[in-house]
Image 1 (tube, rainbow, N blue to C red):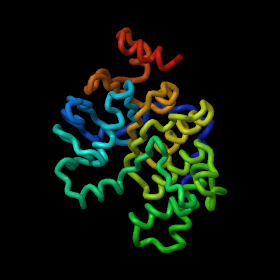
Image 2 (tube, helix red, strand yellow):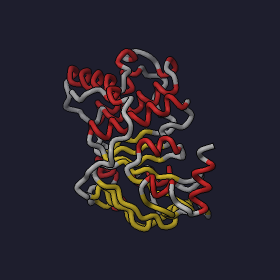
Image 3 (tube, rainbow, N blue to C red):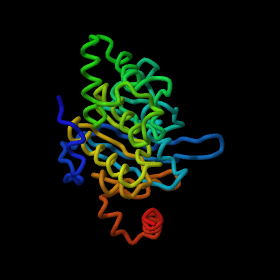
Image 4 (cartoon, one colour):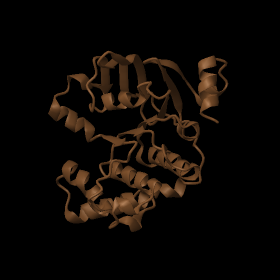
Length: 266
């Protein structure tokens, strides 16, 4: 069993992950419109194996649309998306389903089933993805991931009995039951108080470390970016405006970047 993620809860962001340079996701010239509204006009980026890539941008800049296109939840209008070297845009329904089994998607809302207990919420994807597991293996896996997020005592609780931060942790546990290779986080700290936000950010780092995931973290929370980012990309007007380290962004003299950082630090 992996060490509990909450054991790392007081740790700061570890040094930038050393990786082999292997590309896990490669996007070239991605375009996506909704009617006459162009959201992504020419997005090009790479996610390297083992890194946390933070994507910043104002509301409406296409951050969430980007990761939904990566997971095949939204069709793109052009460009290319390769995951593990395979062209997502050429996938049929069966191939998209197989891809999604390798991707953990933490939705902004948490997306738990309100009518199911915590146990049932975690059983649902596990039974669908790993059909050869015995009842004992399913129970052991659910107990393991709940211990990972520090909520082993919530097994039989309903989502309505949990705080916002606890629901977010259960949602994270639900993604971990399938042992994803890639994690996509959509505004993981939105609506949470500062202490709980910090805990979620540190859990993201612990997932990266303990599960060896490669992650894209969509956020406008600068503290989340500071705590999780190995590398940062900023989207502006449907394109990648700047790419670099946190230090590159914080020390930038570029007016739009300064304005974004000041606005999100107030």
